[in-house]
Image 1 (cartoon, rainbow, N blue to C red):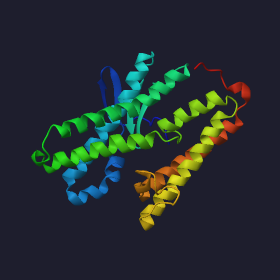
Image 2: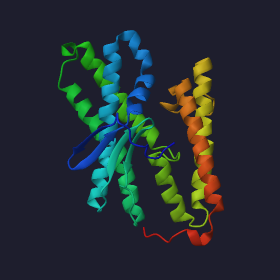
Image 3: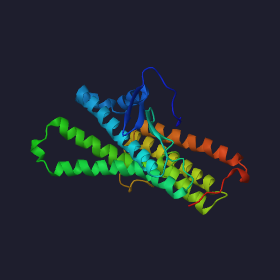
Image 4: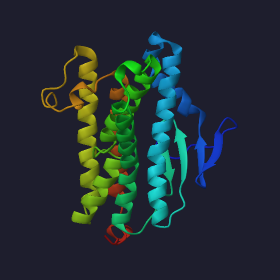
Length: 252
């Protein structure tokens, strides 16, 4: 699910700062699906949502690739159905460099969020039209809340990859399994929470005091977290079959 998709004749391709960028057609379809309820406010708002998703995910992936360039990798960007990929950017030997690359994606999103908030403070609210207000709300939601969600220790989100790096540093022989087990438990719990909220409007008691998570509930989120739990389970099965001599020593 989380590998680079095959090329199609409908891909968009260009270069930014010398970085190859490709947009798979399913990126547009899934972005429309995620914001489909906005069509009730007008199809221009739905298209605005898609544009904000595009800009935000592109900035996120640029953060990964540009940080990777500092350490010598030559990654490229693919936007596809499950968001975005910075292919090749974290292929580094040193663990701390890989962690830096992983953090740079959400970090770029948080910087974009800060710039949007700074812009809103410089303009009187009454001077903003509906399109501008909706664009600001979308950019805040995507770059802040999706960024925080992406940092949860769930594989293969950035937070899940960072969790695996840290656990394998602390427990070289079993850290990967610990990180994936944590990912299964957390993503499964969030899937149940999202389903519970979509049905009853209330979060699970264990999560109802956590900001944002207590409101993160709809069928799409439930499906996404369930898929992440299954993906983590598959990765755990692969990890369990690896032999100790298959695990390379890595520098921090």
